[in-house]
Amino acid sequence: MIGRRTKARLAKPFGSEQRNALSTLCANLGFASVDQPLRTIAITSAMANEGKTTIAIELARAMAASGKRTLLVECDMRRRSLAGRLGAHARAGICSVVLGDVEPARAIVRTTAPRLHLLDAEPGVACPVDILDSQSFRSLIAHLGRRFDHVVVDTPPAGLFVDAAVIGSIVDATLLVVRECFAERAMAAKACDQLRKGGANLVGVVMSCCEEGASRYRAYEGVAER
Image 1 (cartoon, helix red, strand yellow):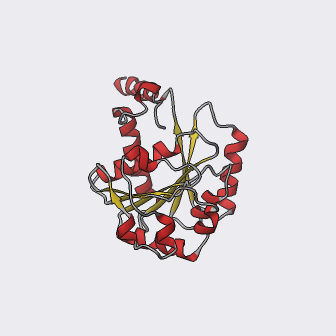
Image 2 (cartoon, rainbow, N blue to C red; image 1 turned 45 degrees about the horizontal axis):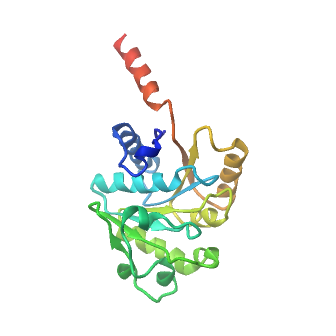
Image 3 (tube, rainbow, N blue to C red; image 1 turned 30 degrees about the vertical axis):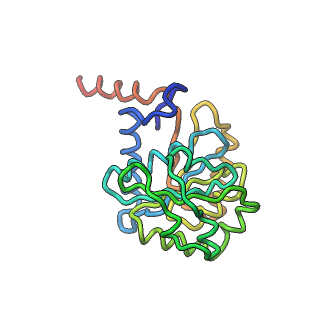
């Protein structure tokens, strides 16, 4: 559960409660598969505006802050935003890498956060699924998973596009972001069903923009005091 961010704080780093929630998420991902670590992780949602990109960025930041070499991959090619939000821009993107025109090392750039890197996507990709549903893309994800401790892939909403299901079948795990009091139950269920049918390892749900996270913890503190 990730707490709400007001409009005035959207551009600012997460607060302590939100950072604690992200640290818990990182730990849970580690516990989810001890024998075979989840190195490549897709982040999606059922609908637009549920906070999936914010969760992808902050999860990657938390992983990098914990000492892990981390890569963010832009695969929401219809609505690119990672580069702008991170202030990191490259001369080449993932499509050039998949097509064999550029080596991955030349397309990946550093961000201002230590150990956090970005692989962007080119603008105006006509048919992203053709890129994503290719053996070259599969090979690239496998390569990146060997090179980095963690690879976090931002994808389009699973309830609107098939891209997330395609990527989910390739990566080690998929997380579904659900915005509290916003996402429709039917849409969330449809997204889960589509991801599972596509072969994704759906390991959990992240609830974003929560109002009650902190108060619930305070309730536990009251019980502990008794």
